Each structure stands twice: as C-alpha cells, then as structure tokens.
Image (cartoon, rainbow, N blue to C red; front, side, top):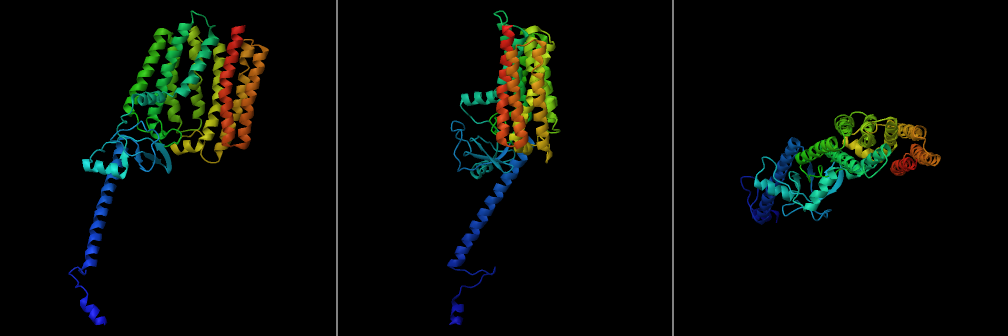
Length: 417
C-alpha cells in the first residue's frame, strides 16, 4: 500500500520541488510573496527618501492613519493625504489633511506609493480656503500674547499722561506700532522654534510645525511686521518708543530664545523684554522715562515669574520633550519652580506698593492691590505644597486676573487724583 502511494506521487524537479496542483499553488504563493517583498522594499526606499529629504529641508516627517476622521474638513484638496495623526516621539497629535509632493529623487510611481502607504513629507501648504490662510497667519502673531501686550502698553500710556482728545491719536499710534512689533516678534519666534514646537503636544498644531505655512513666508511676514512697527513708532510717535520696541524684539529673539534650551535661568532673562511694553507706552505718552515708569516695569517684571512657572509646571513634560530647560532636569525641577514662584510672588507683593509711596495712591487702591497680590501669593504657596497641575492652573488664573486688575486700579486712581 505504501509502495503504491509512493509510485503515484508527482516527480521531483531539479530544484527538489514536486509538480502538480499543490505545487502550482505553492508557486503562486511564492510569486505573491515576492511581490509583497518588492512592495515592502519600495516602501522602505520611500521612507528612507522622505527621512533624507526631511533632514535636508527641516520639514516635518509624519505617518498617516487613514482610519481617523479629519479635524478640519475645510482644509485639504483632491491631492491631499487621508486625514490622520502626526506621530512624534511616541505621542499622537491630530492634524488635518495636507497636500504633499514627491520628495527629491522620487519618481511619480514612488510618489503614488507614498500616497498609498501613508508616509510623506510636508512640502507645500494645503490649498485651503482664504479664511483658513488668514487664520493661520493671524495665529503666527500669537494674538493671545499680543492682547496682554496691548493692555500693558495702554496702561503705561494712561499712567504716563492723562487721556484727552488731543492724546487719543498718539495713543492709537503707540498701540498700533507696538502691536506690529509684537506680532513680528511672535512670528519670528515661531519661525526659529518651528522644529521644537512640532515635538510639543501644546504647539504641534501651530501653522509652521503642522506645515500649513512655508517657513520662508513666515520669516518674511515676521520681518515685515517688525520693520513696519519700528518705522511706524519712529515716524508717528517718537524715537524712544521705537528704540524700546526694537530693543525688546532683539533681546527676546537673540538672547532669550536661544537660552531656553541652555539654562533654566532663561526665565530671568526673558522677563526683561517681557516687562518692556509699559515702558513703550510711557515713552509714547511722555517721550521720556521716570521713576514711575520703572515702578510699573518692576510690577510686570516680577508678575511674569509666578505666571510662567504655572505654565512651565503644567506643561513640563512637553517642554522636556522639546529640549527646553524652563525647569531643571531631574528632581530639582520642583524646588526650582517653588523658589521662583514663591520668592517672586513675595517680591510682587512688595513692588506693587511702590506707586503708593511714589504717586501717593489712595488707601482703597493700595488695599485692593494688597488683596490681589496676597491671592497670587496664596496660590503660589498652594502650588509649592501640593505641586499638582490643578494648583498650577489656579496660580495661572490668579496671575491672569491680577495684572489687568492692578493696572486698572492704578489707572482709575491716577485719573481721580
């Protein structure tokens, strides 16, 4: 029986394989396996090409997951990659669909395979609706930061010179010029930090790291705003206000921004240009600076530390992932945060009383300022003891309430004298 079975088996060919239906099926599997392996090799070549292009151009490399829903349905076009998520450092960040072109050295077939396999490099901004483009450029200017700059500049002008019909035009010009310089500074800052912003969950969807705006256009846009703001202040306000604004831009971009990746003391350096807007407003009103202006500068200077320490603690993992040394690495970061938040909150409480002695502020204004400063100090002490994100969020909220309220009290007190 066994000998008969052996007799009817298909013969073995020269390669040691038997012919017949099963052999034919095995040959088909081999051909399929070879085809799959070739496809995998093509994908690997495409990925390597994208990585090389990303290193040369500095553009973000991403992996697409086509099963995700788009976050911004209005963006994208017929040539867009399926909406997905950027994967950076093990973290997923949602992004809208983007138009991608073939990396250098890739054929059209490689580009098509790129679209199918979902690996690409952002090389062009998406062809979006004009309102989305305007929104992206508006986001580049950091409008939430500019709002606070406008408030402190207005406070400096208001405290430097009583508001009158004759001074309204000068106030308007001071605010517009300062806004232009601040917008240019924010845009240039995002241009310099675009690669690192892409590694942070909080900033990965900004226009530059997300690929919605070409870096060269952002650079030109920021430079144009900065130069226009400096000339605007020099021609329509005065030279001192223009010089202070441009000095603030230079200090922020060329000193503070590089130090963010080198030392935790960068906050101390960044507080110097951060407190300059009241001086610009005061200079716009009077054309000179006196002791009252520097007292206002001291309040804004020390206010920044508890405000920024709350942000740094809430997003410490994001900052560490991008390589920013807003807090020291290791166990010393909590002590550093406590030291800066507590000491500077106490200093803020002290310097907020300067206007009481310099300008003879009213008792009611002084008491209200003390209450607000005590609230910031309490929230800082709470963060020092608990060291949680919830406590940091309360300190952040207290600091946001404190500064406009104190400036409003000082302005009202100045107007009633």
